[in-house]
Image 1 (cartoon, rainbow, N blue to C red):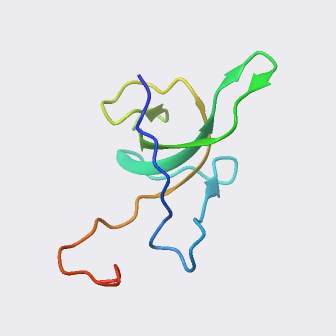
Image 2 (cartoon, rainbow, N blue to C red):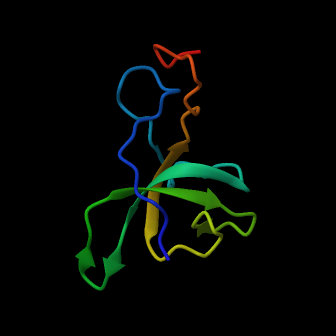
Image 3 (cartoon, helix red, strand yellow):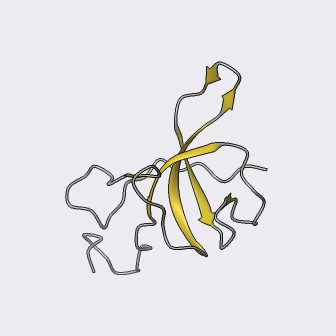
Amino acid sequence: RTAFKYDVFDAQTIGPEPHWIPCSERLPKPAKRYLVSAVWIDGDYVSKPKVYDAVFGTDGKWHTTDYEVVSFEVIAWQPLPEPYKVGDTDGNS
């Protein structure tokens, strides 16, 4: 029902900090996977932000990786980092 949680950073940004793009600023290209920062809102309760792997659908909604509509509010997103390649010693190949 929810996407997987990851504690990672965006390897494509400069420096060790992730480069989050607020959804209020702009939305990503559809039909691709992204890391998203999202909160659960229930009445007056707002959870702490968590990081998930999600897809921004062609319908303009966020989905889990198995394409179910997410039940949390996405507040920011960033591209997924490049996958690890065997033989990488510094992760920048």
